[in-house]
Length: 312
Ligand code: TUI
Image (cartoon, rainbow, N blue to C red; front, top):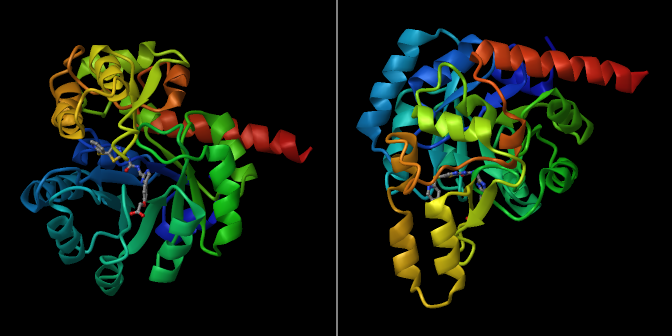
């Protein structure tokens, strides 16, 4: 059990945060990761506060350990879920896809530790000034909504830009990635894609199967033209959207409309044709369905062995 600034900050056994995967990260997955000694997250995604309240209740039944909520700032319900997490005194909130600045004072007042996901040093500095406890520096190897920089480039630059702890995200799916993250200056990692195939993850079996079968070059980035790039697996949906984006003939509104509901179709219905299967470039490393406890123990054990060798 490696103690780091992150384990001490949050009171967890392993410096591993589960990614806040929309339509996927529910109370079942979050509580399983927390019970395994990491930090589980419930994704508030595009759902309203009532849905989130139910998930928080459920997670509290399933674990006594700390868990957090990830708030996707582009969600139309961001303001109401921001109020709810304060009301519920959730110990940790992570944010994605925007600037959480206006919500941070209220969260700090409620005693919440805020860990914004950032894709640049500018956003990391802003988060630090606003009172963030740590930042999650996410490279574009990640699945879902992504920035421009790779994990290799962003983590050390964010580490140099701020004095608060830095967690690395993007492309990390085994012990080698964890060890590399420490070398880049991170005190912990956020892992999405590998937890997506966890036994406790309730995502549709077709989604898991597609991750398990994915090779290194099987992801594609759509939405660049619209200003919100999204990494997902190649399939008829994403190939078609990609083509429409670059044919120059499709209006932006039509492109936006095509994306609506696509992640839900993948995660809940397993619609291999019309779903958007968000996944990171590390999907090619993910080979087996395991419990959250097995995933964390394997990743951390491997990282410890590698880091010992590095010291020698
Ligand atoms: O948020 C994510 N990943 C996500 S959110 C999501 S839900 C979604 N569904 C459909 C379409 C689009 C999204 C799926 N995956 N990761 C964290 C992250 N945040 N990556 C990049 C950023 C980011 C980007 C810009 C953070 C801050 C930022 O600042 C912009 C600003 O407001 O200045």
